[in-house]
Length: 449
Image 1 (cartoon, rainbow, N blue to C red):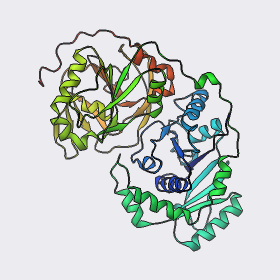
Image 2 (cartoon, rainbow, N blue to C red):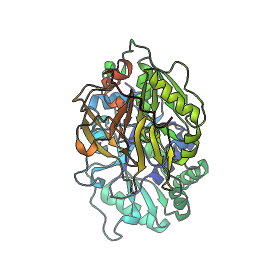
Image 3 (tube, helix red, strand yellow):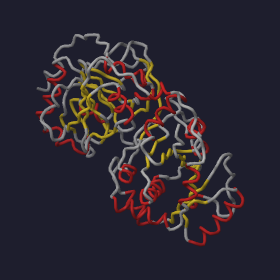
Image 4 (tube, helix red, strand yellow):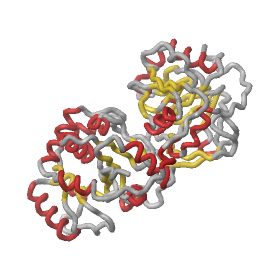
């Protein structure tokens, strides 16, 4: 088993912002010639795609709440083995609100034997009293340092009293941070912006010590059968919606589909007039379709193609913004509504005060092609959309507070849960061998055609 160079990077202060330092660190590593794969410590999608700008790769996901230790290690090995360095990031325990559920970076550090690097926000610290030293820490990155004098004093104090090296620092950089804050949710910052952040960090960083931490530990044993995936007998062509409007997917789920023998092809609901040939299953991920509502609404050929796909007995799976696109109407940021595909007799509304996605566990109230009744599903609830029925809308969740978080029509399933199927590889079986209850519906599109 290779060493798999790896580190964990996370905050210890509540409400501390970490993405600026992460982008700077990733850029510095890139400029040093390292190919870096990032991993989020929870299975939901970041509000900004800066890591993709820097590394050229989408971040992958680990989650100690969803995954067993064995599945987590196997997922990590599959995602990291082609990279020079794997970087797992999130919040350490002291930064997590009390009682909050979901995956834990601390747990991943134990399961994966990760060296722990702490992001310390100097602007949030008491200038006269250092916080209590975390129990397990291997290095520090200082963020929002006022000037070189504060950096020298704080670095000296922390190295002496905490007994760990300071690996680098970023100053307050108000202009750069204002540019970063102006990047719309779900969009990528410019390469120029990331390069400038990296250059600022590289003025003070210690790359040799970072690399020494990353290669200093053996990786826990992974059974070979957990890494290999058995191919499916059934053939499957999955059409993935991928463009500016839809681009949030769990990369490990797509990888496992391909490893089991599925053919993955992409298409654009914004620009294409039809689905790829021989499509069995359409997969509509999340994203920001509300920003492109006019173009999506006016692409009548694609909307008709999706309805014809279902009328022919084929399937659609849609999450978050993808599910909103399948509704009769979608709310736009200005509060207006645009007509969408019309598969679900519902309006998709934007939440006025979106929050972080929350981890929930629900029960299927009745069978659908994803699973039998009473099947338990775990995932992170979408923070931005909610479904409001305008007619009879079959729902599949037993728990009343989440009753419209999983809905269906014909063989289309719309989910307001982000489900990382790679967290439980057997949950991909229904993609290849669907349970089909053969529902009997009247024509759901009569009102919108």
